[in-house]
Length: 163
Image (tube, rainbow, N blue to C red; front, side, top):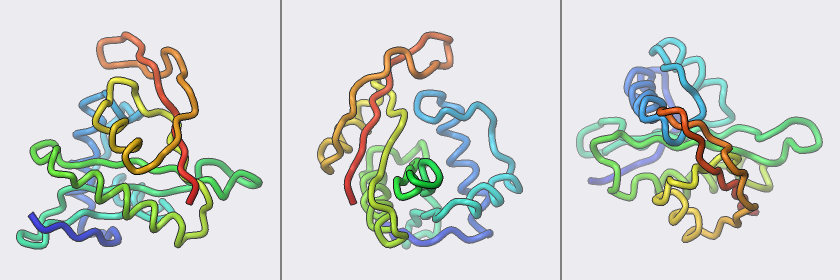
């Protein structure tokens, strides 16, 4: 599969929202609990500093995405935050890694100095290994920082990366 990462367009709203909703519905990575409609998704993806779309160039299908935005405001506005989503049926194809690397490049291009992840769930071992391999630094552990779908709480592991 040949993947190109490009900027979000309105015509991506339905596919991007569906992929986003898969991660929300899995309930093990994103803090959101409500699905996006196509219309709400279009607004949400456009209001980010940047939304990157992973497209299979052989089929034209949207297979993943990321959102990039400030982690905070004012004196901390130079620190960015991002979220990544890959279509459920093709996870494990290293699309997430391509999204993260493109996002880091774009964050720097947009003038951010640091990427910070606030809530990497401790059981999300694929993400933890990826971030370690790329060179993110763990900030510690927040005990019980994430409520899982069955109601139990898991630790979260904040990370940062200097751009």
